[in-house]
Amino acid sequence: METIAYRRRAADKAARALFALSALLVVLPLFLIFFDLLWKGARELKWTLLTDLPHPVGEPGGGIANGILGTLTMAGLAMAGGIPLAVMSGIYLAEYGRGKFAATVRFAVDMLAGVPSIIMGIFGYVLWVLPMKRFSAWAGAAALAMIFIPVVVRTTEEMLRTVPQSVREAALALGIERWKTTLFITVRTATAGIVTGILLAMARIVGETAPLLFTALGNQFWQSGLDQPIAAVPLQIFSYAISPYEDWHDKAWAGAVVLIGMVFLISAGARYFTRVKK
Amino acid sequence: MENALQVKDLCAWFGEHQVLKNITMDIRRNSVTSVMGPSGCGKSTFIRCLNRMHDLTPGFRVSGDVLFDGRNIYSEKIDPVLLRRKVGMVFQQPNPFPRMSAFENVAVGLKFNGKKRTRSEMAEVVEKSLRMAALWDELKDHLDRPGTSLSGGQQQRLCIARALAVEPEVLLMDEPCSALDPVSSAKIEELIEDLSDKYTIVVVTHNMQQAGRISDFVAFFLLGDLIELDKAAKIFTNPADKRTEEYITGRFG
Image 1 (cartoon, one colour):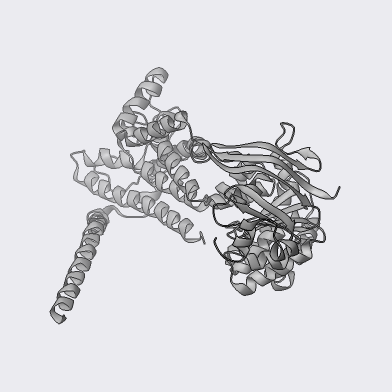
Image 2 (spheres, rainbow over the protein chains, first blue to last red):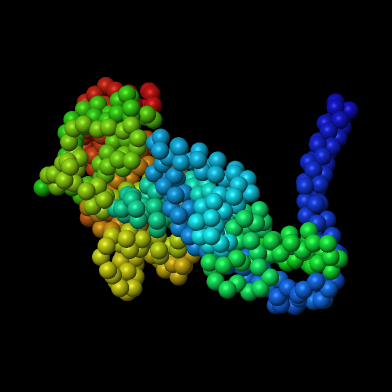
């Protein structure tokens, strides 16, 4: 009896340690990456990074302010167009989507969410850059929106499905019309989850590089209009990193810290919204 | 008219499965009618037919008539949304709206039914409804608390207040006490008796003692058939049908 109990407890502890170790290994890279970036970017991490334009090679200082503004501009445009479309589609799938059409849409959205981002870039190039004959913020935003939308459609649908049927029934039984029930009761109940999904999708597009290479192109100066090439933080990191210059490499590391910082802030916002849920 | 609802030859199906068979019964105005029977007898399905809650259930189908104020609620001309404002419902599990305060929970039906109301008019209706649901004294200083933070019994009374706020004529209650403790159940029962002066109440229950305490009339359902409908006293002392007698004496169910 006693030996069996001893072995059982040992096995239990071993299993628990194994799971905990796996969890630790999973998050370890995040800390490694973060401290490595801080270490290597330290030389260029100054306030001017956030406020100045890039400086020419060999000239110390300078920043990626134009990239930050460009990233926010394109993410903002992508979200302004993408959120209404994606949330309404998610509502359709969750609240009305029973038939074949909905099943097809659901499948297509999943496919779309799985398309590699470089392909979204090429698609944006063919669809916007070629006809307009120039790289532009619009084209970059469109490519980002195509990544953003499918993610938000599916999270919106999932979040609405977590709303108990009894909530919808209670509203209908009060003589509230179905569309009002959906919009003002069901969606309201799921708002925290939907906002979280939107923020996580935003964190994702803020860091995307590939779709912007063929659409936004990048820019060493302030943007001169939405129909012109535009800078973005990931693009700036990319061009610094592939350059042959030592000081540009440092700037690439510092830029990466800024990018991680932006993603961190957005994710923290998402956490906040899930917190206040109850 | 002395009957609030008249049900004639009501049949209902989920897909191929028939759950209600030719139900014909009248529901007396301003009285409490209990629908009693063992699980699966169709009692919940039956009262959900009275405010067309099954409209959105795929594969659900009815035949026959349900007359409310003399008009068939299943006719093309009836808007189920307007019907449900006249025939309210309280569910088995208390289901206050999450992320809404107690006040909003009660006000929500009015807020979305089209007519503009001022804040003070709203507050008046909320107070009146909460008083009718015997919840005002407990809740008047906590109206901004989330509805879901109340106790189970309070939540159910909040749901009753919410249903009363849109001023229905009929109140359908689908096992309103089965998720509650005995003390909370007693409060709801008392409330049902008080409300029956002004409202027509139909209560589903599988609790015979409860049916006996609160009802003016009792309908006994078995496997989709209405076996017997009579005054409560008659059903419990001298039922006409042998199956009713067997059920109330606890021989099955």
